[in-house]
Length: 122
Length: 107
Image 1 (spheres, helix red, strand yellow):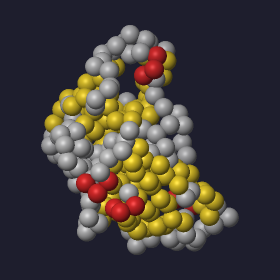
Image 2: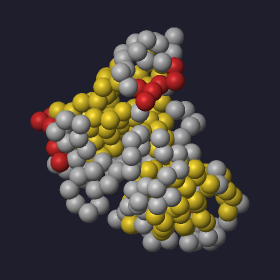
Image 3: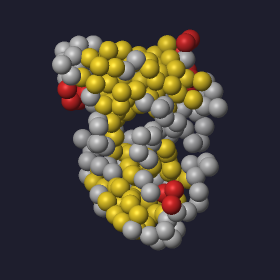
């Protein structure tokens, strides 16, 4: 079964840092782009960042550029999001989601993890 | 940035009704569009990819159409389990952007 499991969320003070992880199983992780998507409480979905299969290309939404860093470890089948200088408006459930890869159905986003909640508050 | 304007923002419909949701892109995105369903407290689930291709395992009452700037998601006969919020996503150019969502409620 293709599965993504996020971890690392929690309560952090404004200006603080947090590192999210996403463990992948059931597919060849190294063959796919991977993404982070977030959802603030009661709000819609927002794409945050993605990373190419070999980590050589990374893209970010404007409001997190310079503060968040996406990375991956293909040997560990894991995706990460290092979040620094956190702000109240970063409070959200963060999902990892698989993106482009081999095969005719490999378009964003399928599947999704269950999400991990990040709360930025003093 | 490409803006995705989704309409309506909410709708109320009866079981068995035909429902259509529209997404308009602020510039052409070919068929680089997906549709997602989200139920409260759950992760989104992909229904449609490449604008009109049905995700494996998704009921055939869901269909997608469109290309360029105008896209539609149609539910041919609304079922009780379809009451949820639906989002479109453009993945043609960065930053990728979602529509604001359509909440489908029971009438």
